[in-house]
Image (cartoon, rainbow, N blue to C red; front, side, top):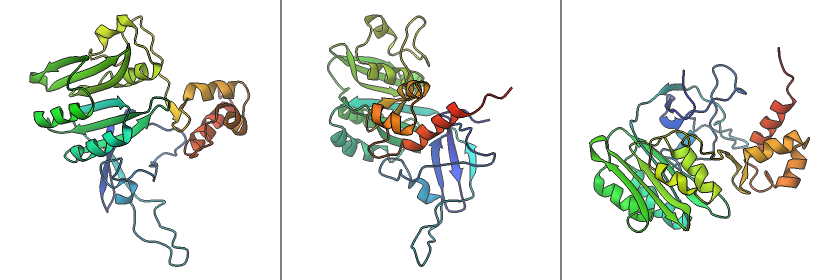
Length: 273
């Protein structure tokens, strides 16, 4: 009874970690999967290492971190935060990461390639101090200039969107983040339709009626390849090698290859009636 994107607490006998859940039909009933690559630098907490064992094989030194018994349950963190800012990604990351130590959940990731952006998602039980949000806004380049702003102090909601040359270059949603996904997609698309500007601060989980915004999840961050492009390549009969050659996905760090293989397997699976 969990929803995609819902925050959950994963507990083991050794520790706990707060993460967003994602449904995955490839997992068997009673199983959960968590990548091993994210530690405290990019995700609040020690990542999967806080849940697993410190034991290792005495001969090969292979760590025993491939499996652990865990309990997964929903966690209520009512104050949500989402931010995206392009440019000076490393500098902004180093400055912003320490400011989120007081949040129960916080994650930092990259998006885009030609216009790389830092993406921050966070959540906490209590509303953060106003001065902290002001510091965050300055580092996000949202404190002054051509910034659309909305504040509702009674509901602890505040939103900022910076537009330059008709494009979103930074945004921050605090206290209410329903529009985060389609605003991120709008940033990735580039130019903002003038008719959409008056909706940028609205509490909408999808783009307003009649406005089409591409919602293509980035599958390969290294080459900035979206899932739609991979689906299109598979529909044309490309296998993994063909997708790598034509699109370039999976040819750099390789972390997207398992996901591409999963999409290929889904396409090959027979239709059950």
